[in-house]
View (cartoon, rainbow, N blue to C red):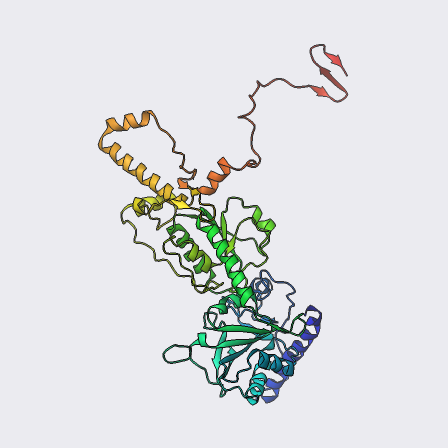
Length: 486
């Protein structure tokens, strides 16, 4: 598409130049000195800061753009700052072959079918719908593009033959689980997983350049969901979770990061927020402290498909929410979502309630429950081994509570304080602190990292006394006690 960019820019500039001339002709106050003060400038943004499906607001702000024209397919995630004009482009589709595939997949004319297509093939849906009706399909619906990522079908509304919206409701509307979707062009994996539990079945007619004309993705979807659940179980015992910022333009991404951070803190775990641009395994391997990652991005880019080379599992916000549930409450009904739209906000607890206030001052994370009854042992469901560092911030909060209680006892009985200060034993589970804040990352640096950066060798070698060095200039200096001149 980049090769067509100069021609597109020329056509846009031609239309922009033509519009003011038309306005001046229609204006009654046209004068000879009425000229345009500023000419519109068009810039080509050849690359994206994160995902190609998202609008690149970061690159657009570098040129102080007022509007962005996004060409090609898109995830249609709402932007936070700039208005966007979408141009999905048009692709050639063999409607006769698509109808033949539809009839082979659904020989029963009474089948409940919803016609759907990728955004680049959306312009073919009305004609495909009309021809399918002529072939005798009676219970047939289609879709229309609309900005609604959390819809029953993401970014689509279901319409009937009169182009009226059809409600999706078991009582007043249709039951989506009774319908099958015939999708034109291969959908993104995130959409495939999202629709797998919402509809009866999903049948795909691939684009013409695909090796196969159509296929049923049921077996592929089950395998993908199984892999996602396996990665989810890896994070259930993670003590340190990294929050990967994979967007700077999707609306409400900052509030989503804050909500995810609170969810992790409420589970007794530690989180670190990292911005690395486009994700790859080499970048994330530099953060060996992390036991798992969660991606904050659009509903398509939050799913990292090619993750075989990643050192730690990378989850979506929905998967992280399931992973943070207790073992007795963790039930996954095969529903799935990849974006930040479904992130549930965690309500802040009122300050000064019990031990939460004291623990917040020490750990820097609010909402950490330190109830000993809830501190049950954590076992890795894959290996069956006991994991002692699955909730490091809960251990730190308990240590802070014990320290505050000991401090209170010392203030009441000074004699006991002197005895307690005589010998202090450091607990094995005690974490390193930075400015009074418990830090599992600093503990990892202190105890597990073999290389800790440039430093001094004072601990390994004894220092020597300062001695007088050589004196003189290069053409006349002495060496040793013999005063030999060189």
